[in-house]
Amino acid sequence: MGQKDTIFGLDIGTTKVSATLAQLGESGIEILAMAKVTNTGLRKGQVVDIGETVSSISAVLEDIERIAQIPAQNAIVSIGGAHIETISSKGVIAVARPDGEITPQDVDRVLEASRAVAMPANREIIHVLPRSFTVDAESGIIDPVGMTGIRLEVEAHVISCASAAVKNLVRAVNQAGLQIQDLVFSPLASAEFALNKRQKESGVVLIDIGAGTTSVAVYEEGDLVHATILPVGSMHITHDIAIGLKTSIDLAEAVKIRYGNALKDNVRDVDTIDLTVLDPKELQRPKAKYVAEIVEARLGELFLMIKEELSKIGKDGTLPAGAILTGGGSQLNGLVSYAKQSLHLPVKRGVPLAEYPGNVDKLDDPTYATSIGLILWAMGHQSLTEISSSPKKMSFDSMEGVVGKAKDFFKQLLP
Ligand SMILES: Nc1ncnc2c1ncn2[C@@H]1O[C@H](COP(=O)(O)OP(=O)(O)OP(=O)(O)O)[C@@H](O)[C@H]1O
Ligand SMILES: [Mg+2]
Image (cartoon, rainbow, N blue to C red; front, top):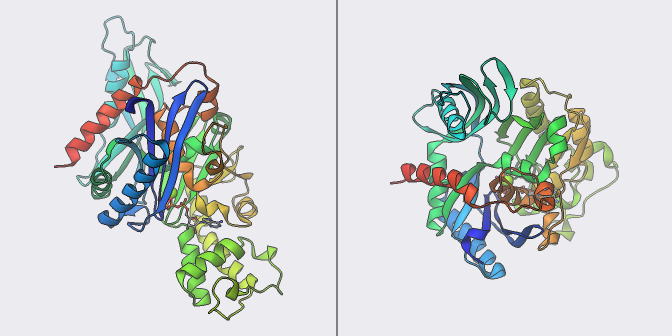
């Protein structure tokens, strides 16, 4: 098997680096290896210690190569952090051909035109995602290629990030011996994993609760409407518990996972937590309700931020397919009920959209959602179900346009 046939998704998160190596076989995606290692080189989704991040990437790479027995040289890499911004932009061009037929080159040109937004010198554009095209007076067009017109207009999302953040990330990946094929805004990758086409059509919000951040991506009529990263994650709940109980972070983390509950009303007044089970030196027996109150207070802050994001785009409580939760923090006891009450929406945990051979046990682990999502993103933004049921093989050559552009972009960035 050559390098060309495999895709390597690398999710560099605040607490862990997770990676998935996959290939497209006869029956769809085959996962060749999945692995994760802890990472201490990031704060709130941003690389703050390149050396630590390089060690974590190298360790995960070693695991993947050992399991799959194939070297990985190129990676599709996630980028997160609250420095990332999405703005709407428009581009307009005159159709090139004298007969007015719109070609893929016209689409490239109009997208290029929509990139021409006033961007401060310290920011880089990572994605330009078309929302819809207008050909002359006809608006709401999804794919204008082959249509006829004089004027082509696009409405696009321009996603940009702080230059320093992307440079540090690229440097860490390169120093671990990997080339970056593409850089993907992490909520878009998580959404590829956890949302199906039907949900995206009806209207849905993806909420990826990580350690240092929470990613939010809203889809409607199949398209991305809004995406953002909030600077609060499950690690903040751990820190609050450590302060409230006056314990170490490690013990607070264990308390959160084992005894934490998102809803204080779910916890009986009489229940206490025997901390000696987790650490023989800890003799206190805090009330389980007290811990739930701490958890609920921080969730209150986080869900208020999520609701504000939804009301910014007029979608507060009005998304028919509701909210889908993923990320490690989504595993908190009682969180689905809490989110239903808070958002006034149907809420479910994201599940893998199809079964595929290899590493099946890890598919249920939501801390892999982004790294698997990166692979789906690379496969042309198709849902897993579509890929696995489709008899036609995806052409990896078709990815090379995107990848080539990405490589040029990284060359420009680095000396
Ligand atoms: N069973 C559980 N219950 C509650 N929280 C959990 C559970 N398992 C893991 N977590 C939390 O999930 C978080 C890690 O999730 P994840 O791996 O998705 O984050 P990350 O990708 O490293 O961070 P980020 O996306 O913010 O950069 C940790 O804060 C951890 O405490
Ligand atoms: Mg994450």
